Image (cartoon, one colour):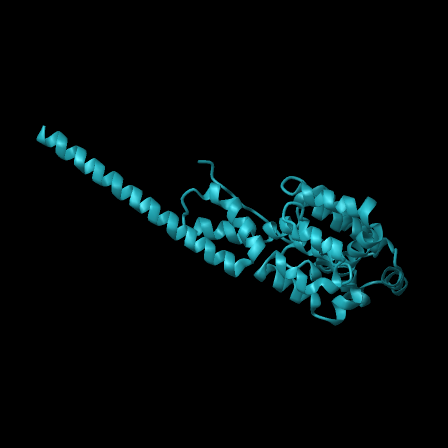
Length: 278
């Protein structure tokens, strides 16, 4: 049996080293970060790449006033444009092999479905970095695009997004109906249909490491054949219910395996006795 494997860096950097170096060099050049102390320069750039343009406020004293004002106050400053490219590349490189559907989803919004909304979400990420991406950028971006009425003001001044996140990860896909105020009705109905739901796929990705870890931890027989069906159930019903179902399945499979082994042992012993008597 082929061994299943899972590796993920939810907010890690999967961009190639040379490309990442190009981004860091451009940021350093734009901000005129020519400190003798490279540690400060690296700290500023690393903070920006993880926490977006808003993190620059912490380093106002390290940047020339004219450059700081230009980069912080302009909606299309060199830094914000560069960060938008950076975060898109990060999503792209994280998903280009295993989650091509996500890149297709982004492209659809960018070019056809809702270019303004796509731009708003990308800019929000460039401004705030990982702040709203939580521990699963794929799920976060999908939610931000689908629930378009959760805008920047709502994100900053309420905990609606946190509640939506908690509901959908703990209670599953159907819990989105409680947040119908923030999503178009036709979009919600489309997402409730598992056969065409992008959100359902995103939830599968969110739960994938937990499901894999639990199955591997219990050395589950027939793990490969169970994996997809369990992921689907967890995405539909949420983690607590899904975890309970997984443990029941594991127990059932273990009992079946134990019973099968006992039968085999009894058969082997019977054959030994027959051969001995003979």
